[in-house]
Image (cartoon, rainbow, N blue to C red):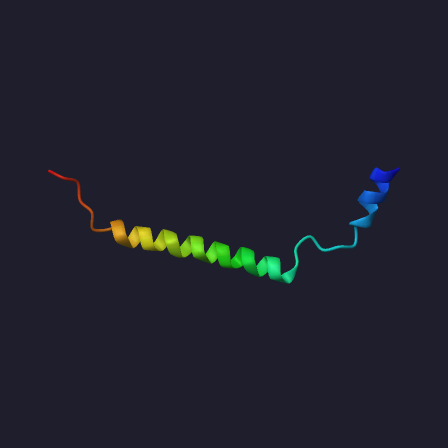
Length: 49
């Protein structure tokens, strides 16, 4: 019976809060900026002859 009670207790609660959504968005933006920085840094590399 406790499993059903635990399942019903979380029905009305949102999965993510506003602050957690903001943190995920900031993390995604940081990853994107890191990818752009690496792409910019390696764009002028050429293979050694």
